[in-house]
Length: 179
Image (cartoon, rainbow, N blue to C red; front, top):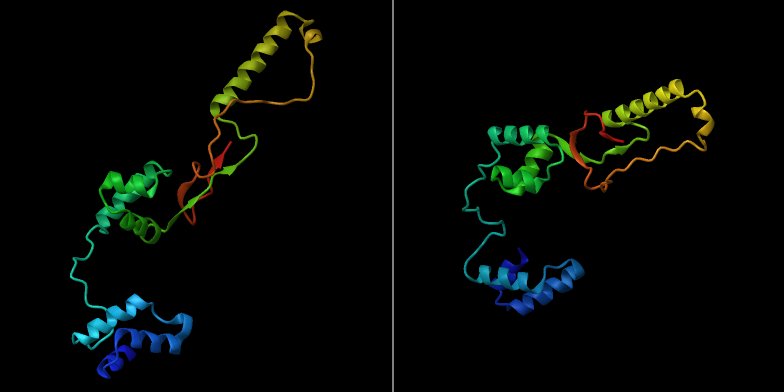
């Protein structure tokens, strides 16, 4: 606003910048910004509000697209925004807004829980116990040959990072668990 008056008083862009810098210090607009506004005021502009955008409003954020995003996330909660955007051919910013605002979802990390066994691990333990029971029944002295020590179960697994284990969940959904 002050730039309008300074331009009307015949001040140059540099003089305008110096005066604004003196008045506002470090909070003043940058030099190039002042020069750009000074030029616009010199060409007849009278208001400081931005011009209306000429672009079309986004048509990606429709109820149908929100439903498509929701269905994909229900199928695989580990999908990233980029993966969703690529699959649906929708801009990433629009997908992010749909997930955060429309679906009210957020990324959460999987909680590590000890001794939560998968079905395969439970079946393996059962098979080992049955095999040991069979040996004891067949050979009564079998346990005399067994050396015992601290009980430790070691399983081979491919650990994933915290980021790899994140999933999309609503605020009311239970936190996912990882064995």
